[in-house]
Length: 285
Image (cartoon, rainbow, N blue to C red; front, side):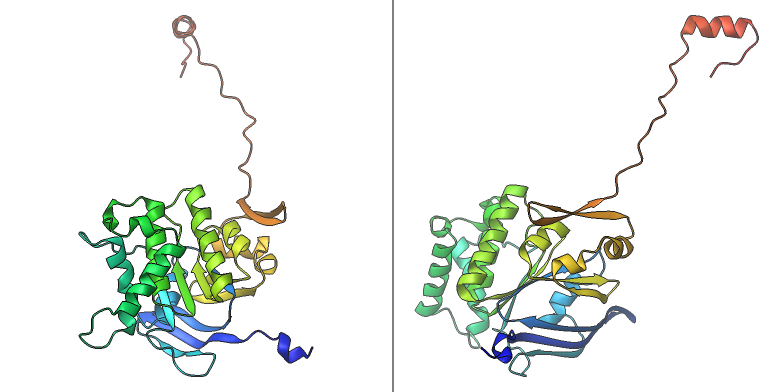
């Protein structure tokens, strides 16, 4: 087999991507190539530019530089699908109606959903185990159910690249694992390229093929989790000392232990003792 056949194909190429708000540059010269079928984890402190990068990829914020597909053309409305960090769940809308919003990018001006669009929505609901929720109001769902419905809307768009902004930020541990396993399963079945901004470094390392570490709008590191999650590098970028351990084959990032406190507080002086000391002319605190 030739070496060329082992080279991953490109899903998206990003070159010198920059974003500025009110004259302040918040994303600086990002160069990035997304491989088809990979999971890229975006990590970095709050305010490092993760959400801005995802929004810039789909054209939701003004930017300079280039974003293009592997074919060399700019992405269209059906090429990348973004699941925002805090999606709006409209009052009075059912699950199936919400999922059908994912088909909007495929509709012409003033067009309505076709039977084909409804088949896509129905199939996505079935695959995600949401068929029984189709007629329920989206605001009546639990946190885990709502996250799955938001993913369903993104998948209904049928884009080859799925962008996720903190997809599990409001979920407990059990539902976090459920949602991330679901995304990974769909990625492998459909060949999706996933880019996910993730808060927990250990979780990011567990699911991502590569990690992109952002630091104040710049790309500080890009590579395999074991290379990017270097204790000294992460400590510098996050501004706090951390340790990186391997547990059952997975990387775990934890803060440096707090300094132990060996000094025991002194016992309070009994009231009677205070009176005797006062009588003797000594001050007792």
